[in-house]
Length: 96
Image 1 (cartoon, rainbow, N blue to C red):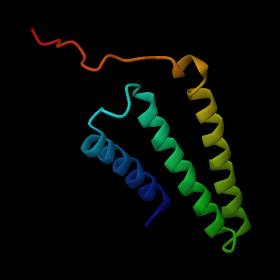
Image 2: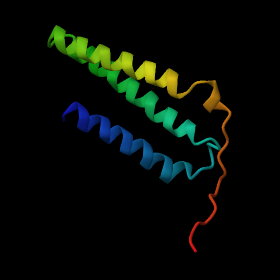
Image 3: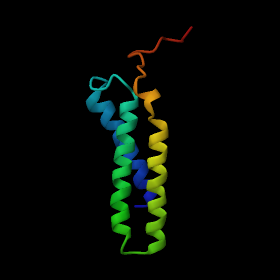
């Protein structure tokens, strides 16, 4: 499986797990589910890095840069401003 396909399958599995099992009961903050997806993606990137160390140096450097960019994006996206945001459980109906 290609790395991009693996990342897409991880993201879709996290979304489906949240929809099937959580049903909004565990998280009142929707940023927590996105944080879970980022954490799983970062975990699989680290596993991919460990497996690529024996293949080639350039591929492992590429994966290290991916992990570094994920960490920087994670820190920027989940700063203190977003941790205290509460979204309503049900959004208002906009149908007329």
